[in-house]
Amino acid sequence: MAMEDDGIIEPSFFDVIVLGTGLPECILAAAAAAAGKSVLHMDSWDFYGSFWSSLPLHHFSSFLSTGCRLSPPIPPIANPASSPSSSAPQSLHLPDTSIEQVAASGSSLKELEAVVLHDTDANCSGSSSGIVSRSSFSKASETELDGLGLKAIPINNEASIYADVSVSEYGNSLYTASRAYNLDLAGPKLLLCGDSFVDLLLRSKTNNYLEFKSIEATYIWSGGGLVAVPSSRADVFKDRSLNLREKRLLMRFFKLVSDFAASSSDGSNFELSAIELESPFVDFLRQQELPASIQAMILYAIALADDDQEQQSEDSFKRVTVREGLERLALYLSSVSRFPNALGAFLYPLYGQGELAQAFCRSAAVKGALYVLRRSVDAILMEKDKSQYKGIRTGSGQILYSQKLVIGPCLLSLENFSNLMSFQQGLEASGHGFHTCRTTESSSSPVCSGSRCWKVARFVCITDSSLQPDQHNILMVFPPRSLSGTFSSVVRALQLSSNTSVCPEGRFVVQFSTLCLHSKRQRRLFSQLLRLCSGLRIVLVIVTSKELGKNTSNLVQKPKILWSSFMFNL
Image (cartoon, rainbow, N blue to C red; front, side, top):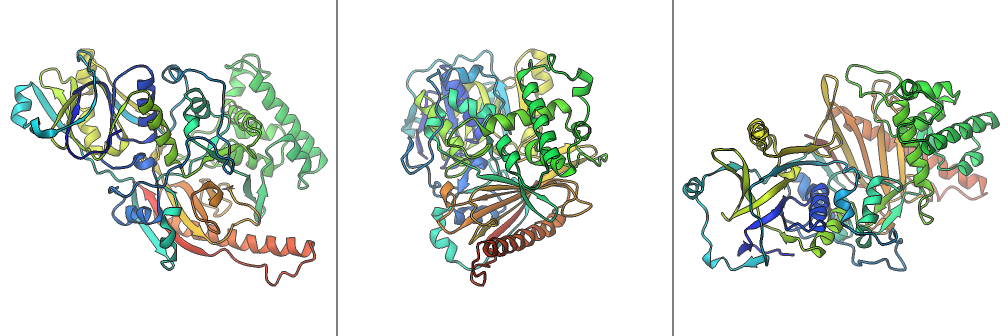
């Protein structure tokens, strides 16, 4: 790997050039390297992860206060060990398989947003690679590009993902331990143990560079308090809030989910017809005679629906179908029992989500990929006559050629994307490849539904105690209209403790997130959430202490917010 400002890159021909070190770009780089392709992976910053990074507190604050544009900070604290230690959670293991399966696997790349350009005529054979002296290098001018039959499409290296940002600090004591924090630039994000992405980690052996901590419990707001979500059949029997009939109905429903998971992939061997499988999941739950509280738990805490499934409007998302709902429940139930040392269905990487991108970078480097950081790209080069992709021009003026180019969203401002898309019709007509790879769950793009675009609002805070007594890492879900009768989106809150290595001991990081249309309304909603959670903790401490016969006078302590920030994505 290289992190040099000076010198030129050799060779100047590669099979694949990847710009940006976000997670999707790193996965593609690792897959290409595993397939034997020559890969050049570049980033204008001096750390890996781009907008998928996890930064120390003072760098995270700097990022927010400078217009949410990344400036090269000191690299965040990384996992100090490449193999599990006795004091840390065990890494995931699977019998040895070839990493080459990554390129051919059917795993979905969640939150992928990249543009892929192809040069079908380029000859990209090269031998040695690396950074050499720039004494023989001169910057390619526009005149020289014209002489080569190339034209340049400018690229903006400064992209921003948040607007309407505010940061509240309550004293400077937190900054003395700034490097003990690893705060995610985008999130919160969790992995289900049974998800295809975890399969990808295991098949590619990238899990050898990672360690995880499981989320201990999931809670849902119901009846004016937080209620634990059952994660297994045993939890259902232990739940005192359900009577015997409700438990029997829920167990019968879990049996139906298991039967669906055991049926063929298209559901043809399942007892429901194809028409029934495409009907709304919320109607199907009513037919199972499940209590309203259990229906909400299944819809929003297990199936992870994002908006109100009961009351739909023109701006609502498409309702979750029976097929989608059963698939999500089957995934959740299989996740609970997949790893013996995992307490629940969800995993979170130690040291923050930025470790995921770095792990795939390590995997690609082992397979021969060349890494160059602190090197910007100012233009994409196209052939003048055919509008066919040929290569890139770095900020220092060097021209590099490749058959394929992958561009991360950190370089794709609306202007850049429009410039590239203007060539798409001509490229497709001439038979040359130009592909835009996008999914609807990008952390840097709004989600469009109906006549409007929904955006992500985040509220990140640091507290001095847990929002739930004796709990460290938990997920809290607030269903639609549970906090406000007019707010139709789900609000989720992820609390992480020091055992995930994202904060020092005695501190907790809480990340609230929701989809919304207006940022001002979200500020008030998040403030209300904090008051509810803090007040609930006081009630729980008092009740628990009285049951144990303890004096409550010294135990009632409201969690104190030490630092907070609000972000509204562009």
